[in-house]
Image 1: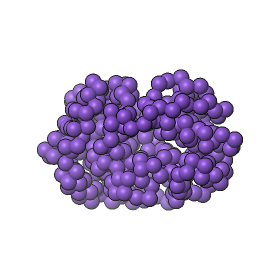
Image 2: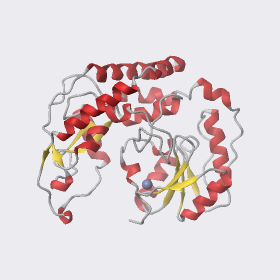
Image 3: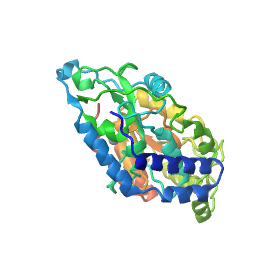
Length: 332
Ligand SMILES: [Zn+2]
């Protein structure tokens, strides 16, 4: 089923113009565009996606023991990206690569990305922008795993975050990939990564010197002063505790080391700062990390420990509230 409407395309166009402005370093212009996104119209559009999900055909399920519960691999995601080019295969709509949202959220004071895709304020933090649900690209089983589907290139397609969450164990007819040059705005990622945070946040805090830590390498890359300030205090809080800080802003190896730990020791605890400044403890196997393989996870520092109590102690030193994720509290 094709699902077109002017609201969807208008929001996409505004967001794309904001991204282009950010890429040119025109941060105030980009912020102005993002502030004009019509949240109410996007919410109404999410309702139309939920209605579409209800038209999906239920399919016989297979016993739990026969289900293929493997996560979609990075290689499969890359093949799906190359084939579907960030078009929803159920509506034909153009989608936005999740990492673009991450970068825009890092630069912007008005656009917030919540990695759990919450659009309401929760204990975890402030509400994320609803555009992430309507326009964000997810990876969806055509034949659901509950119905015997596998996480293979043939059975995984792009769809929106909203449709992915609403469809459940049912099947929608596929549409062809439109013949256009759309690629999810991924072509702007390298320019976005070069941009610093908004001028307002830069003005807020002078940059303290980053103190060296035995847990982490030297400072190799410049980073926005506010982020350095935060990093310095969370590195200081880790000093002498059996916890490790992984932050790509100060350590080019951090992402690689973090993903190695994630595959080798999935029960390890990590703490993550949500958008509001609240901290949350997860296990490395938490599905909140698995959503999009192309996201650079250590852009937001990850603080790891084999015991949750050490992360609580670390939070106490830092003077921040710490909560535990209910999804992944237990060992795998
Ligand atoms: Zn979790």
